[in-house]
Image (cartoon, rainbow, N blue to C red; front, side, top):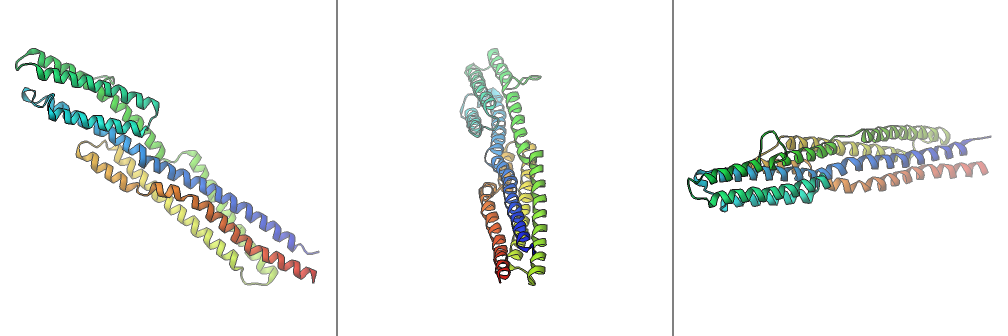
Length: 308
């Protein structure tokens, strides 16, 4: 008794399971990579650069306050830099890279900046030659930056930046779950291609046809789709690595804007790719349907032959 019909159904079931499993695993692996890249582009990198901006602005404010006769202390130059620092800290808070602890640190730093500004302004109100002027500036500088402690403004910002960078590093580097997911996707894709090839050979030998167009098209499209996903993923991983290198450089002054532009370039369209990952589900289901369309006529054809 012929087993062709049963063999075809077994192969159809195998291709369905492998096709759907490959689609789901590839979707999850691809989405995870690009979601991390999108978060790095939209939140973590701007948060780190905002802290850099605040630190740079406070250094410039300190330099303005230290000018001869306190020119700039408590005046437009000093307050301009302090205002820039406040705006940068507000941006860092809105990015919320490190969660509640980071927001608390930023609130504390904002309060300390008010204390720092108060000491500098008090020094600016003292007459020239007054010993209080130097004392007030000393107090201000200790609030801003005290050696061998991280309880001052700059120390807290440095610690916050370190924590933000750790978040960015986790987003830029694949962890073991992501490695497992991509390994599973590669194994499933290999098994799927092998099953498609074996099914093609089976139908050719049983039905005396050179090739099944639908199965050939499905195989080619699966291969093209996998190559595209791998290329996009490698491109994204390279972009996140380059962006992380810029952030590790701890840019200052005008270099912050330059680093921000480079990071934006490296991570361009990361959010678009993350959103486009839904197309993997649609494409996978379509290819499974194409595979089914190649086997169902063979099953129907065999039934007709058998009944004859």
